[in-house]
Structure formats: C-alpha cells, structure tokens
Amino acid sequence: MSYKILHEPFLSIFLGNQTNLEAIYLAMLSLPFMDTKSLIKESEKYIMHTYSRNPVVLIKGRGTRVFSPEGKEYIDFVGGVAVNILGHCHRRVVIALQKQSQRLIHVSNLYHIEPQIMLAKILVEHSFADKVFFCNSGAEANEAAIKLARKYTKDMIGADKYEIITSYGSFHGRTMATITATGQEKFQKGFAPLLPGFKYVPFGDINALKNAVSPKTCAVLLEPIQGEGGVNIPPPDYLKHVREICDKNNLLLILDEVQTGIGRTGKLFAYEHFGITPDIMTIAKGLGAGVPIGAMLATEKVANSFVPGSHASTFGGNPLVCSAAIATVETILEDGILLDYCSRIGEYFLSKLKELKNEFNSEIADVRGLGLLLGMQMNIDCSYIVRECLERGFLINYTANNVIRFAPPVIVEEKEIDLLLNNLKEIIEQYDE
Image (cartoon, rainbow, N blue to C red; front, side, top):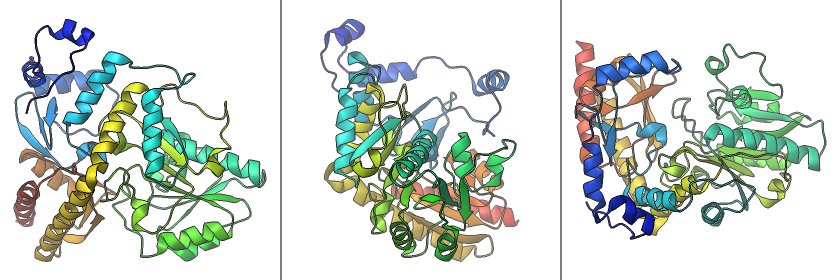
C-alpha cells in the first residue's frame, strides 16, 4: 500500500524528494529497538505498577496485526480495549494526523478551532444531540456529564436534587466522581471517602430502578451494554422503560457510550438499537481510533447550563486529535459500509462462539454481545486462556473475573475469527487434560 503526500513546503524540506510515504513508513519500522526483555526491565524500573501487564512489548502495527521487537506477530482482538476501531495505523487517520501536525498541533480553547468545529458538526448531525463538549478520555466525559446533570437540575429545578442512579457492574472511569459512579467495589477500594450522591441498582432490573428514585434524584447514568462489567446486555425494552421513568420523574438520562459508541455495535451509537434517545451521552475510545479524545453530547436545553467558567479542558478537542476523529467518524459513516460489515461480522463471530459453547457446555457458561463487543463467560480460569492465546499469537483479555471480552477492529475478517476460534478450541481441550 502506498500513500500520496501533499507537496507542502515544510513537508518538502523534511522529506526532500521523497514522495512515497510507504517507503518512509517501512524505513521507520526498520529503526533498531531494544529487545523485549530489556524493555520490560526498563518498564518495571521506571513506570508505576498500575497495570498487570502481559510479558509482551508491541512496537508497530498495521490493520489487525501488531508486532514485537523480535518480529512476532499477534492478531489483536483487544483493539486497545475497544479503541482501535479501524485497526492500527489506518491510512486515513495517519494522513489526517500528518497533515494537521504540519498545520497546527495545539491552540487554546480561548479561540475557535476549525477541526473541533467540524467534528462537533458531524457528531451533532448524526446523533440526538445539539451541543458537544470535548475532553481527553471517557472518564473526563463522564465527569463532565455528572457535573452538567447536577448543574442543569440546580438551575432548572432546585438545589436539593443531586443524586444519580447507576448500576452494579457498571464502569464509568477512574476519577473520584466516576469511580463513585462505578458500581464495582474493587475500583473504589482504598479511595474512601467517596463522593456523596450516588445510588446503585441491579442492571436490567426496572423495578429496582423505579424504587430507587427519590425526591433527591436528578439523573440516571447507564451503559447501554456493560463492557467492563462483563459485556452485559439489558433485557428487551429495559432502556425504553428507563426513558419512561426519567420522563415521568423529570430526570436526565445519561448514556455512557465510551465503549459502545462509534460503530462498535454495528450502529454509530448503541442507543439506536433500543429505540430511545438520551439527554446526555459520553463517548471516547473509538472516537479517535487511537488518539486520546473524549466528548460529552447533550440536547441544547441541558447544554445551556454550561456557561463560560462552568467546565473546561486544556487539551480537550485540540486540532490534532479532532482531525484524527474526523477521519475516523467519516470512515465509519461512509456509505454505511463499515457499520453493515460490523453487524454482519459480529453476527458471524457470535455464531461461532455459540458453536464453541455447544461443544464445551461445561466450560463455557454463556456467550453474548452485539456487533463487535462480545463476551464469553467461562467456568474455567480465564487467565490460562489469555496466556495460551498470547503464546499462539492472539491478543485477548478478560473482565469481571470470568468473561473473555472481544473488541477487535471492525476490519477483522472471518478467517481471523476462525483462526482464533480453532485455537480456543484446542486450548479448552488441553485445559480439560
């Protein structure tokens, strides 16, 4: 694959007569790297131990494949934890970053930013929303949503309404507000006292939600599909009933689409599957196809409560990341091809997982998911399966202790899925032995 480069003055100075970007890309990949063992030693010396890292260093990638310094190839079914929606180093994203980096990398939000304006317009025109706030991550987007929900309610209804109902098994981020919103104690351990004003109910239990509403409630915050909680799908019409409860009680509905948004489920946003619209929505992960960007979207009525000084982000929506996000969203939306493909390949993947479950009914408790956010709940040690897949050249991970989560790029092919499933079959068979 070769790329054409724009002949701009600064680029010409840097590249001379070189007009083949692929040659430059290959030359960069040939640069010497430290070996895996040495890099891991340096990592353990200098980086805080906040992750249980696999003993692998990844230095380059293309499409669904990533590579170690020694050249070992892995097929990526983690996708940067649902981030690399278009795969690694997608052509249009790379070119967008290159072009924008020559023009303007960062400027303060004290000024209007062209790529930010363009991205906001695309997101508004393809969603329920009227306004967008840009930040750098899903946690920041959820933090902004929590603040907006409380401020809107105080502005429009009264100061005594501030509680937000979330669900057990949810995950909303790592800030103090978002770990409090997260209905999993393991993420909250050691950080008490948590922030007041949050209630938790079982995900999918509409009666529990209805009973949790009090005079102090201002909003309900839910993931349409719980990703970190184990790829949990709500019962049919659950979100419709949630919407009805919010309308009846004058509450805001906030949907956390950090994992499900930007084509992951076969539609641009997961709420489209459920016949509802939220008042506020958060997105991140796939939005930049690998660059750090988050966004909070809202109706104009709600968004009007954010005025100058209410909220801000120094790097939020800077020119570089917005250019990458524009390329990402335009690629996802183009003729609906990738969205249709995500639905079809997701159905194929799920059908193959169901076949595997039928074969290993005692080892596999359940398979579930939508599009290319899929989970396989295990009755056997998930860490063993992850390690064995790594040895065989597949990146997978597990969450909620016993659910293997698959979130590959939407360009994953049937033959790659078949290859993974054949290896999973052998690994489970060996585990029995």
